[in-house]
Picture 1 (tube, rainbow, N blue to C red):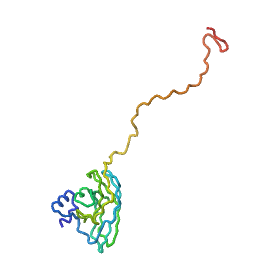
Picture 2: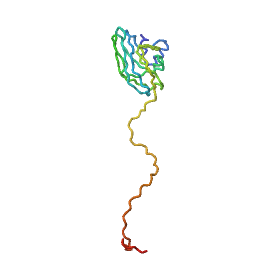
Picture 3: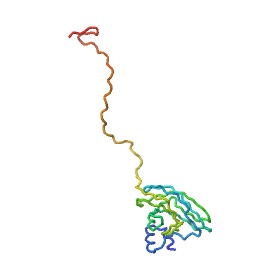
Picture 4: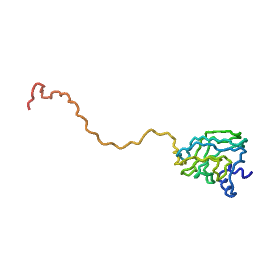
Length: 203
Protein backbone atom coordinates (compact mmCIF):
# COMPACT_ATOMS: atom_id res chain seq x y z
CA UNK A 1 0.00 0.00 0.00
CA UNK A 2 3.02 2.23 0.56
CA UNK A 3 3.96 2.11 -3.13
CA UNK A 4 0.40 2.77 -4.28
CA UNK A 5 0.49 6.35 -2.91
CA UNK A 6 3.76 7.52 -4.43
CA UNK A 7 2.40 9.61 -7.28
CA UNK A 8 0.32 11.71 -4.94
CA UNK A 9 3.46 12.90 -3.10
CA UNK A 10 5.63 15.87 -4.16
CA UNK A 11 7.48 15.19 -7.39
CA UNK A 12 10.97 15.46 -5.87
CA UNK A 13 10.23 12.69 -3.35
CA UNK A 14 8.43 10.76 -6.06
CA UNK A 15 11.41 10.73 -8.41
CA UNK A 16 13.81 9.65 -5.66
CA UNK A 17 11.52 6.90 -4.43
CA UNK A 18 10.88 5.57 -7.90
CA UNK A 19 14.58 5.58 -8.76
CA UNK A 20 15.50 3.70 -5.59
CA UNK A 21 12.73 1.14 -5.89
CA UNK A 22 12.95 0.77 -9.68
CA UNK A 23 9.17 0.53 -10.05
CA UNK A 24 6.31 2.46 -11.60
CA UNK A 25 4.58 5.28 -9.82
CA UNK A 26 0.83 4.70 -9.44
CA UNK A 27 -1.12 6.98 -7.14
CA UNK A 28 -4.06 4.72 -6.32
CA UNK A 29 -5.06 1.14 -6.89
CA UNK A 30 -5.91 0.27 -10.49
CA UNK A 31 -9.56 0.81 -11.31
CA UNK A 32 -11.68 -2.30 -11.66
CA UNK A 33 -13.21 -0.83 -14.79
CA UNK A 34 -11.21 -0.03 -17.90
CA UNK A 35 -10.96 3.77 -17.71
CA UNK A 36 -9.08 5.49 -20.54
CA UNK A 37 -8.34 9.07 -21.56
CA UNK A 38 -10.44 9.22 -24.72
CA UNK A 39 -9.48 12.67 -26.00
CA UNK A 40 -7.87 15.98 -25.09
CA UNK A 41 -8.08 19.12 -27.21
CA UNK A 42 -4.79 20.15 -28.79
CA UNK A 43 -2.67 22.75 -26.97
CA UNK A 44 -1.77 26.12 -28.54
CA UNK A 45 1.43 26.47 -30.55
CA UNK A 46 3.11 28.82 -28.06
CA UNK A 47 2.49 29.79 -24.46
CA UNK A 48 4.73 31.79 -22.09
CA UNK A 49 5.85 30.65 -18.67
CA UNK A 50 2.96 31.41 -16.28
CA UNK A 51 0.72 31.32 -19.36
CA UNK A 52 -2.44 29.21 -19.51
CA UNK A 53 -5.00 27.85 -21.93
CA UNK A 54 -8.40 26.17 -21.82
CA UNK A 55 -8.70 22.51 -22.77
CA UNK A 56 -11.37 19.81 -22.73
CA UNK A 57 -10.53 16.35 -21.38
CA UNK A 58 -12.77 13.34 -22.01
CA UNK A 59 -12.46 10.03 -20.15
CA UNK A 60 -14.53 6.88 -20.50
CA UNK A 61 -14.99 3.60 -18.70
CA UNK A 62 -14.81 0.95 -21.39
CA UNK A 63 -14.98 -1.91 -18.90
CA UNK A 64 -17.96 -3.95 -17.80
CA UNK A 65 -17.79 -2.92 -14.14
CA UNK A 66 -17.84 0.31 -12.18
CA UNK A 67 -14.40 1.85 -11.68
CA UNK A 68 -12.76 2.98 -8.49
CA UNK A 69 -12.08 6.75 -8.08
CA UNK A 70 -10.41 8.38 -11.07
CA UNK A 71 -7.95 11.29 -10.93
CA UNK A 72 -6.25 13.07 -13.82
CA UNK A 73 -2.94 14.94 -14.02
CA UNK A 74 -1.26 16.79 -16.88
CA UNK A 75 2.46 17.05 -17.66
CA UNK A 76 4.84 18.43 -20.29
CA UNK A 77 6.91 15.69 -21.95
CA UNK A 78 9.93 15.83 -24.24
CA UNK A 79 8.89 12.59 -25.91
CA UNK A 80 5.81 10.52 -26.55
CA UNK A 81 6.24 8.19 -23.59
CA UNK A 82 5.40 9.07 -19.99
CA UNK A 83 8.79 9.07 -18.24
CA UNK A 84 10.21 9.86 -14.82
CA UNK A 85 11.65 13.10 -16.21
CA UNK A 86 8.11 14.35 -16.88
CA UNK A 87 7.07 14.31 -13.22
CA UNK A 88 8.63 17.69 -12.22
CA UNK A 89 6.91 19.31 -15.22
CA UNK A 90 3.36 18.91 -13.96
CA UNK A 91 0.87 21.55 -15.05
CA UNK A 92 -1.59 23.21 -12.70
CA UNK A 93 -5.21 22.32 -13.48
CA UNK A 94 -8.19 24.35 -12.36
CA UNK A 95 -10.47 22.87 -11.34
CA UNK A 96 -8.68 19.64 -10.46
CA UNK A 97 -10.22 16.64 -12.19
CA UNK A 98 -11.45 13.88 -9.94
CA UNK A 99 -14.30 11.39 -10.38
CA UNK A 100 -15.48 9.35 -7.43
CA UNK A 101 -16.66 6.39 -9.51
CA UNK A 102 -17.47 5.74 -13.16
CA UNK A 103 -20.12 3.23 -14.16
CA UNK A 104 -19.59 0.90 -17.10
CA UNK A 105 -19.49 2.61 -20.52
CA UNK A 106 -19.81 6.04 -18.90
CA UNK A 107 -18.20 9.02 -20.71
CA UNK A 108 -17.30 12.24 -18.91
CA UNK A 109 -15.88 15.47 -20.30
CA UNK A 110 -14.50 18.36 -18.31
CA UNK A 111 -13.22 21.75 -19.44
CA UNK A 112 -10.30 23.01 -17.38
CA UNK A 113 -7.60 25.67 -17.40
CA UNK A 114 -4.00 24.43 -17.60
CA UNK A 115 -1.30 26.78 -16.28
CA UNK A 116 2.46 26.48 -16.87
CA UNK A 117 4.50 26.86 -13.63
CA UNK A 118 7.48 29.23 -13.53
CA UNK A 119 9.83 26.27 -12.98
CA UNK A 120 9.28 24.88 -16.50
CA UNK A 121 12.34 25.37 -18.80
CA UNK A 122 11.67 27.13 -22.09
CA UNK A 123 11.54 24.68 -25.00
CA UNK A 124 9.00 22.58 -26.93
CA UNK A 125 6.97 19.82 -25.26
CA UNK A 126 4.17 17.37 -25.86
CA UNK A 127 1.26 17.75 -23.45
CA UNK A 128 0.49 14.44 -21.77
CA UNK A 129 -2.68 13.82 -19.76
CA UNK A 130 -2.56 10.74 -17.54
CA UNK A 131 -4.80 8.81 -15.22
CA UNK A 132 -3.32 8.71 -11.76
CA UNK A 133 -2.93 4.94 -12.25
CA UNK A 134 -0.49 5.41 -15.15
CA UNK A 135 3.02 4.09 -14.58
CA UNK A 136 6.29 5.62 -15.64
CA UNK A 137 7.37 4.33 -19.06
CA UNK A 138 3.82 3.78 -20.32
CA UNK A 139 2.36 4.97 -23.60
CA UNK A 140 -0.93 3.06 -23.44
CA UNK A 141 -4.46 4.40 -23.04
CA UNK A 142 -3.85 5.53 -19.47
CA UNK A 143 -1.99 8.52 -20.96
CA UNK A 144 -2.99 10.74 -23.86
CA UNK A 145 -0.28 12.64 -25.77
CA UNK A 146 -0.94 15.75 -27.83
CA UNK A 147 -0.47 15.39 -31.57
CA UNK A 148 1.62 18.57 -31.77
CA UNK A 149 4.29 20.10 -29.58
CA UNK A 150 3.76 23.32 -27.67
CA UNK A 151 6.60 25.83 -27.27
CA UNK A 152 7.02 27.32 -23.83
CA UNK A 153 8.26 30.87 -24.46
CA UNK A 154 9.32 33.84 -22.38
CA UNK A 155 7.54 35.00 -19.28
CA UNK A 156 4.56 37.31 -19.51
CA UNK A 157 5.36 40.89 -18.34
CA UNK A 158 3.95 41.63 -14.89
CA UNK A 159 3.16 45.39 -15.14
CA UNK A 160 0.25 47.17 -13.49
CA UNK A 161 -1.45 47.83 -16.81
CA UNK A 162 -1.89 51.57 -15.99
CA UNK A 163 0.13 54.11 -18.02
CA UNK A 164 0.67 57.84 -17.44
CA UNK A 165 -0.70 58.75 -20.88
CA UNK A 166 2.22 61.13 -21.49
CA UNK A 167 4.86 60.24 -24.05
CA UNK A 168 8.44 61.44 -24.40
CA UNK A 169 8.77 64.65 -26.43
CA UNK A 170 10.46 64.10 -29.78
CA UNK A 171 13.23 66.23 -31.41
CA UNK A 172 12.46 69.54 -33.14
CA UNK A 173 11.62 69.07 -36.82
CA UNK A 174 13.15 70.96 -39.78
CA UNK A 175 11.90 74.45 -40.72
CA UNK A 176 8.95 74.50 -43.08
CA UNK A 177 8.74 76.36 -46.46
CA UNK A 178 8.04 80.12 -46.58
CA UNK A 179 4.38 81.03 -46.61
CA UNK A 180 2.61 83.13 -49.33
CA UNK A 181 2.86 86.95 -49.32
CA UNK A 182 0.18 88.72 -47.33
CA UNK A 183 -2.37 91.25 -48.77
CA UNK A 184 -1.33 94.85 -49.57
CA UNK A 185 -1.95 97.21 -46.67
CA UNK A 186 -3.96 100.51 -46.69
CA UNK A 187 -2.31 103.82 -47.70
CA UNK A 188 -0.96 105.74 -44.77
CA UNK A 189 -1.87 109.31 -43.62
CA UNK A 190 -0.18 112.45 -45.02
CA UNK A 191 3.10 113.49 -43.47
CA UNK A 192 3.83 116.61 -41.39
CA UNK A 193 4.80 118.81 -44.42
CA UNK A 194 1.15 119.08 -45.40
CA UNK A 195 1.31 117.11 -48.68
CA UNK A 196 -2.10 115.88 -49.63
CA UNK A 197 -3.14 112.96 -51.78
CA UNK A 198 -3.78 115.34 -54.78
CA UNK A 199 -0.49 117.25 -54.56
CA UNK A 200 2.98 116.09 -55.42
CA UNK A 201 5.39 116.98 -52.67
CA UNK A 202 8.59 118.62 -53.78
CA UNK A 203 11.81 117.45 -52.46
